[in-house]
Length: 57
Image (tube, rainbow, N blue to C red; front, side, top):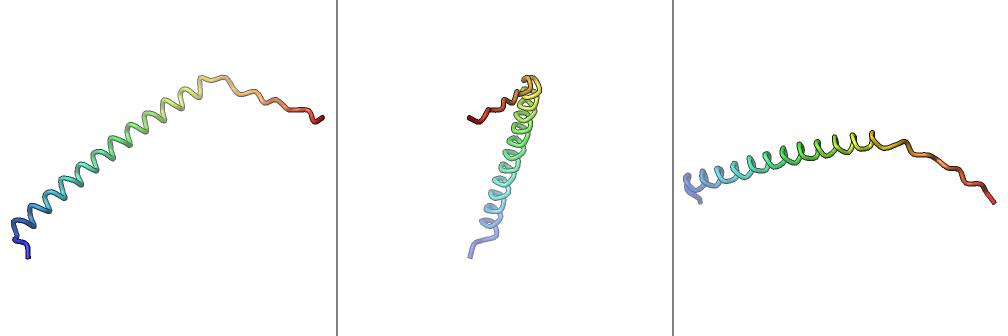
């Protein structure tokens, strides 16, 4: 059976890893949000697409 100190050390390590994971998730979310904003802006700048109908032969 593990001692209380080793269990506490393991829990602190797990806590640090989870905190790092949360920070990385938040950073990824904000980066993706900025990318989507830029994509929306670039789509608005493009001229509307012209649809061309093909004649059946």
